[in-house]
Figure 1 (spheres, rainbow, N blue to C red):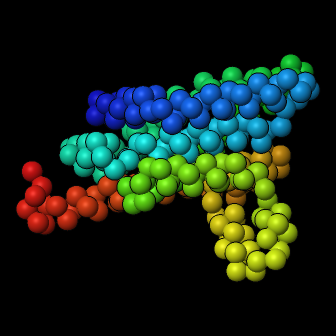
Figure 2 (figure 1 turned 135 degrees about the vertical axis):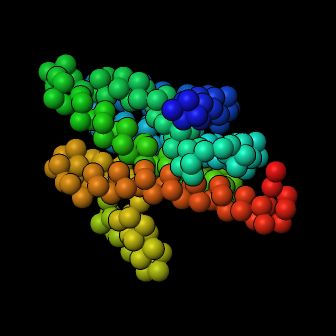
Length: 234
């Protein structure tokens, strides 16, 4: 538990000390302010977009090539310790932000019955997208994984049927995009679960948290295993 706590603290520090994350936080705050300035109940996609943007950019820093990845490879402990602990640190930072955002977007008449599902859906979707960018970072780099995650966060409110219509003139891109939109942990799934309570959406989002953690651990150990075989591992 002490090692897990240490990884969570390190994950939080990797997030709050990076300029890209702070810039994304300012932009996300501006989005929330603009949504509230319109008056009336806000769209859940606003909160999902904010949480997705923050988790995508922040998640890409947790196992970024360099000091963060090297520290994960040198740490003693089970295979899941570094990615799971650092993702937990990210979610601990996101939870109060998303809770405040959910409370602000829901009118006072909505009460706890509307606030709790919205906050939980936003946190789960943010955790799934953060786990995905965390897993991609060791392979493609922090900037590339953060950019991919940011794109998915901003366009994730579009349903697969809307992507099908949007790319009607490009059949090959259409197939790839629609397949990805059906598999990735995007905000349209969180919104559908919030609206209809579809169990499949909840299972898929939760599965991405587990899969992203496992893929992140595998990507972390991949080059480390090569170093051990070559005799360069301490």
